[in-house]
Image (tube, rainbow, N blue to C red; front, side, top):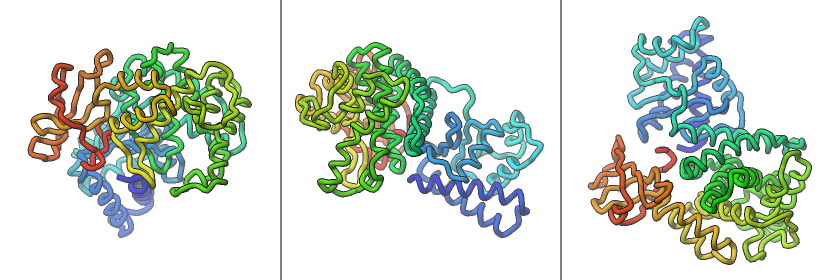
Length: 440
């Protein structure tokens, strides 16, 4: 489902909610709003069993889409969920118009006690709308951290757009959490780097580069303090692009020589911004200045002078390259994780540091997290986890049966490293219509 469809759901939800506070449920405009909202929800639920909507650190999300940019409808819905202490809502397949109406009327009651909301849903036989959230478990925590990182990047970039000097404290705090999570489970956040928001590419790319850089840094045995600096530099590596004409940044076709000259200036512009920002270590500024230098120093800016060792710069370049290759663009389709690795191996030793790249590849295993694979029995599964010590140990979620049927309820399967011969091929998730992040 594209971001515009999620936006329509938000607008439809807030319009129906506000309308019911002004008119009776039988009013023609209310019936029309409910029907449109239900149609949009059902369109999504035809593809999946459930749609989830809620808040991540006060930022509204629907499924994998984070609304980093505020609109009146987004602000209204976020405020409503916060007021009612609703961390998340789940809309399940089978949702009816009467359930949707009852639920919206319930939210509009002035005497509602958030603590009683779940009981009131049960009393009204609202079965297909459920409260979710509470204390996040281990699997939910990576999403929470990723969402906070998106919010922080949005705030920092907005400061730069408005000509303000950004504050580094929130960025350093979230990167600290990201580094700790990566050290505890190197693949947890990495799986979420497959999340690509095409309308907010600048935000998601910045967060993804930070996440992937942390995974590379861990594979290269960097200390926690080094990982924090690396993650911070990755988070801010493209901040200089905010000083370049947006039409050039978003241009789908080939850039002119003059336009590319402006793009080539973004590392220097970013470094200048961070020189004026308190609390940014020199090694993080190096990452911003040097992430396009290439291992053979044939990149740009050619006259860049780094403060210290280029180790972190090389690692950030690997992360930047991996995320760019695996992202859908107007001029290229995304590639699978294994295809990305193959492409990167071809530029190892020229554009990318060969030793750091090999350490990263080894840590990912034969089939990295997020890969769709075909088993010897013809089932197709998604790689959910790989072993920390032995990445050829895999946890799969079987999505397609041996006869090619898409399973409505995927099932888990564990493979030991001795079972890796049971995986016979990688499958292109783009062709199969599977968005891997939907399952994490």
